Image 1: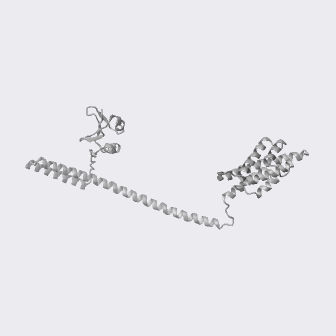
Image 2: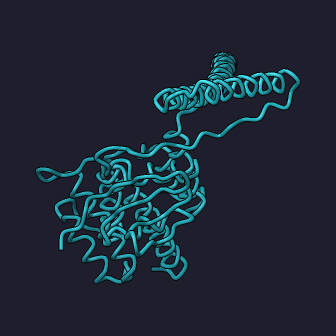
Image 3: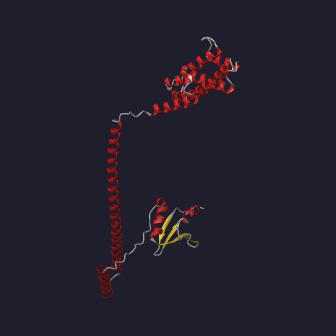
Length: 309
């Protein structure tokens, strides 16, 4: 069975929706619906709300819009409005009298009906024009509000520039965030090692840049050569292994040393396609590993000194 396309018609009091059964859930989204099994249509009261809802839901599916929106008559309770209504009623009465007296034809009656419909449509258009005027006034108010906000923003921008200029004239220059961050890192390391640590004194002279891992590797090599009493020909890998075998480095210290060595190698001998954006983070990893390792090596040397080794 082939179902008809979507179509909407109207009577004086109802809107009649013809729709395939597969689309019935859409028909139920509009309030006041009723299924008429005899006419096989969905029936809705002919109201302005239902007109808007039907066109909103099915307007794009209609070949032609055959329904109209009921006109809402606005009653005018003012003396002028009452007089106007009375005058129109008088005109209607006169027309009816003429029809009765002269036997006016049905064609003339249809013309007058059309005239009345046109007047009703004109009234509806007038209501829309009033509504549009209200929207235009709201738009004008919002535009003025936006202009006021832009003016306030401009003033705040000028105030900010004034503050910036005043700050630039201060005797103490404002340090960049990266420099402040580096000083904070050094303070953390020195607090752990103590001011008297030889490595703490070196830290104050270091720059924790993207190549710090290379410098960290050199510092670890010098410290392990001193503790192992070996020459410069020994590689960092062998120094770390010998320090572990000599119990200078415990297992966790051995891992810290390996972190420094690996990061040093990646900085000193970067592979093709290496992501340079990670160098800064790798240097920070080497910095913390070296700080913790130097702290453990300081403790190792103090213990040996205290026990006469």
